[in-house]
Length: 90
Image (cartoon, rainbow, N blue to C red; front, side, top):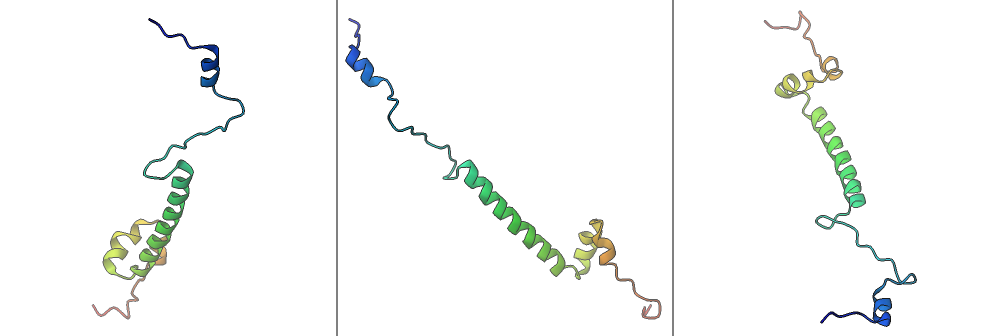
């Protein structure tokens, strides 16, 4: 026996044009896409600032100077500290 809905029931199941338009935003771990982009931008800028600080703070350590700073094209001349021949003890 097949059930056929009455006209009244069919009209009640149809979405109303006057009702609220509800949409649930997609999120991963509580972050929507705009919130994730904003958090990523802030975290990236803090990371760049911290990396730049660490590079200049540890720039006088010979290992960091040789292995890291000499590989950056414009900073190799900035950190080039040649010893004058008259100051060289060897």
